Length: 146
Image (cartoon, rainbow, N blue to C red; front, top):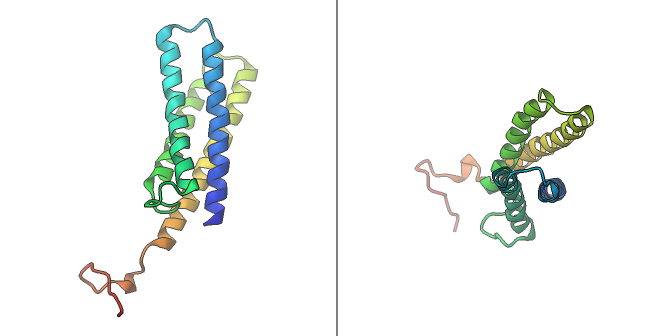
């Protein structure tokens, strides 16, 4: 469980650095229209929102849903991997400078690798927390000794 929590902390920190930087760049870009700026800030807000909710899980504020028992982490990971995979194709084959492509390919690669690794660890932690089949009485009810 500690591996999941540590990797989740790294994933949260990475997400905040990447997407807070994105917000800073969007706000500073005077060439963007209001709709382009709003859309980009919205997307960054989704990532930062996931990071904020994940901080609540790590900090134990969301006690009913600890690490390994919530779908939040899975959704966060899958959203990140899917977003960056799709976005990478647009950047790699779009009309961008080589440096832009290299930097954003690295951001995409790190984000996807972290997300998929965390997803797997979190899924395994959830499975280890699940009641074993032998703790059921066959009717779907848990058997209580005592």
